[in-house]
Structures are given as structure tokens and as C-alpha cells.
Length: 311
Image (tube, rainbow, N blue to C red; front, side, top):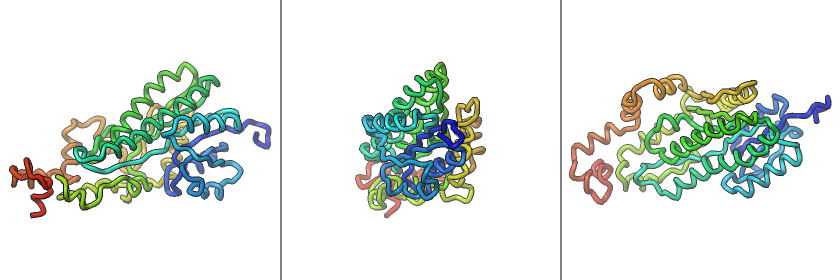
């Protein structure tokens, strides 16, 4: 209860381990809006900075979203302590960068376990309770990658596309119970997700078919460091603003260059963004290398185009 006797709204945020991430920024923004916030992540130590910000308004809890029993237990604890969850924000996410035909599928499955199945588990546990209370908001943080399909991040793209589809299905299913479900499709935001991504080493890239353009690929994936990238606080403010509207939107956009990237994805013929990506990612250069040595590209046991480029 607040000092004035009114019931304080409750929010639960996943993926709050990074001091530079969107999760902790969301927690701070929710506190400024008067929420009691349950911040969850894999490490209490990593979430310690949140206590320095607002000890009385933020609770930190360990939560691995890939464990459905743990998800049920933690959300049950929150409901028992606070009476319910008014806003759930699924922010937990990981990334991976590798050529699709050379990806370790165990890594790809792990990305889906966190980004998609973990999101579904928390939606399931919190959504049932929100439906019973006839109110609540669920926010699933995805990515424009679910619509733009950039190369070399297929594990991440497909996990976010699945999460987007889940979000829209839930939006319709939970609407009769007064529960809103929102998808967030950010572009470049200044977080550590790229630095923490699963990334094949240089030797692995050079041994494969795309070694010649590894630097181009890594540079393109590092858009979080571009000057136009939004700081976490800015996207957090936009997300919370949307979640607290009387009628939350279906989709929230934001991040560096989100207007032009959204326009390209929504209105341009597919070949237009493909052409941009083809050149910026180094694939056009790789195509020229392959064309110069088609026999090597087709059958070189040491990695085709990558081996050709190193000769």
C-alpha cells in the first residue's frame, strides 16, 4: 500500500542483469511512475544497482525464464506478496551471430529457449492470473529483426518472429478478459546484447564459407554503438508510456533509424532492403569472390569462398 492508502501498481520485468540494458532502465522508469517493481534475472549481484536507485520500490529475484517451474514459482511469489501483477514486461533475451548453414544448432535452440519459449512461459503464468483479475498488460520486447530478416542472425530473427506471432495471438485471446498484450519492435538501442552474443571465433569464420566478410558482418551487427542508437532510458520511457495508455497499442516502435527501417520493411518491395543489406553486409563482395572462382566456391573442402579469399 502507498502512504495515502491506495494500492500500488505492480510490475514484473525479466532480463534485468545488465546495468546498461533495457531491463534495468525499465525498472527505473516504472519506479518513477509509482510502481512496485519486481526485477528478475540470473544474478542478484548484477541487479544490485537497482537497490541503490530505489531500495523500497524494487525487489530483485532470480529467474531463469527457460525453467517453467521456476517461472510459475516466482510469479506465484509475486502474486502472494503483492496481490497480483499489473504489468509484465518480457525483456530477457540473447543473440547469436553466425552463418545459418554453419550455425551450431544447440546455440540456435538456446536462443529460442530464452527469447521465445521463455517469453511464452512468463506470458502463460502471468496471463492466467491477469485474466482471473480481468486486467493487466503484457509487453513482449522483440526486435525489428523479426520483420527485416538480416542475414547471419537467423537464430535471433526467428526467435523474435515467433515471439511476435505469439504476442498477437495472445492479444486476441486475452482481450475478452481485459488484458492488453503489446509487441515492441526496437531497432538500434545502446545495450550490451551484441557484446554478449554468441559469436563464432575468427578461426571458425575463416574455416567456413564467409570468412572473407567477417569484419563486414560484425560491423553491421554492431549498430548498437552507432551515434543514432537510443540509450536504454529512452526506449524504456517509450515502452512504459505505451503500456500505461488506456488502450495500449498493438506495436511499439523505437530505436535508432527506426522510422526509415520501419518504412523499408513495411512499404518498400523486398528487393530494396535486400539490396541495402546485400551491400552493407559484404555479401555483394563475397558474390564477386565466388564468381571469380566458382569451382572453389562450389566444392572447396576448406570453406569455399572464404578459402578462396585467403589464397
